[in-house]
Image 1 (tube, rainbow, N blue to C red):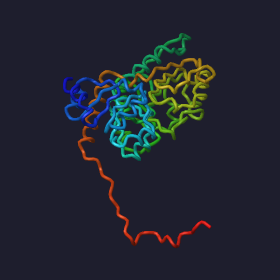
Image 2 (image 1 turned 30 degrees about the vertical axis):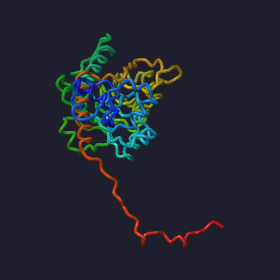
Image 3 (image 1 turned 120 degrees about the horizontal axis):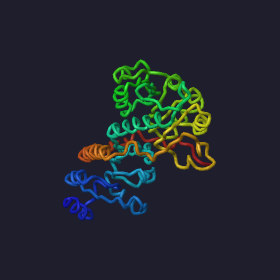
Length: 339
């Protein structure tokens, strides 16, 4: 870490390259400091005014989920070329503003795939065993994952891991993705049977939702979908809760169409008194822990650090100079005048 400390003390002599606003592994910081001027300052995440001053000097930022990068901040950062996210989401970043400013948002979408898949497997095992159903003899018993049909909503990297792991238990795997045609060869490559969303809900004993969230998908899983739940179905979601219509989800849980649901990412205030999901039976919530393991953070940190280093090692593209020729000037005499 000696090199990193020396690098930070010399920042006043030269503009910084990389601003790190969240804790990173020592090996990753050391590697970055060997190549760029690095300032590691997680404490700035809680000091907005000081943070803006530092962002204005940086070429790249490691941004935690707690810090927003909005259009105004982007405008105040003329040197910024890359924003790195160790976590999977980017809801705190104005992606359109970054795109317009030619700032690359660097993420590691496959780094947490194993962690998310393991979380989903554990959650499904827990729900199927812990939330009993009534057997033919009248006794209340749990169920086995190996005898279940599992529906995957969203073909993300974690879905690929799930498609590999679930058949080991003996489960049948079906899937749906709104952006993928049922004839796409990817379904066969991953060993997943393509279904429509309603048909999947009717057939699946358990559902795993890991679809990447976009505003056009808000409320995708609503009344017209949840009304078709197979009896005693359980659901696990590592996606943003905005994919669900909260009233429809609450009705499905209260009415027993959905036996239990485990959501790993909730919008703020969704469980407050007066909201539909407040006190809903069979609902379990965790604070976005599915993708967060020691190993997944290490993989993501290295992936993001290497990509940011590549970006900074490449000369910034210069805007093309376009001279205005005299013949192209407008005819000012022909312009209408104010009277």
